[in-house]
Length: 75
Image (spheres, helix red, strand yellow):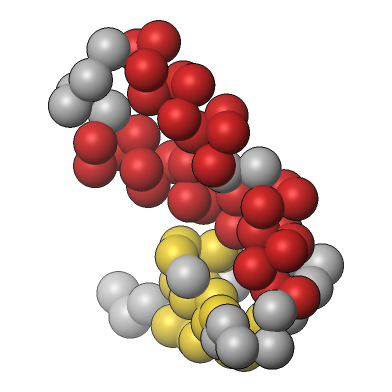
């Protein structure tokens, strides 16, 4: 089965999606490197919609969204 892969440039308005993808990726990659409490505190502080909206609004930052079969898969 072939997968449909697309990469598109994104900007403000994608903060919620990126915060969810980022948090999931961080927990999957680093979730066992510290206690649940520490991981929750870190992700709660650093993976918010506002944090990502601020990054997306900065013209020096460039974000692309990866979709596989039309589903967000990474950035």
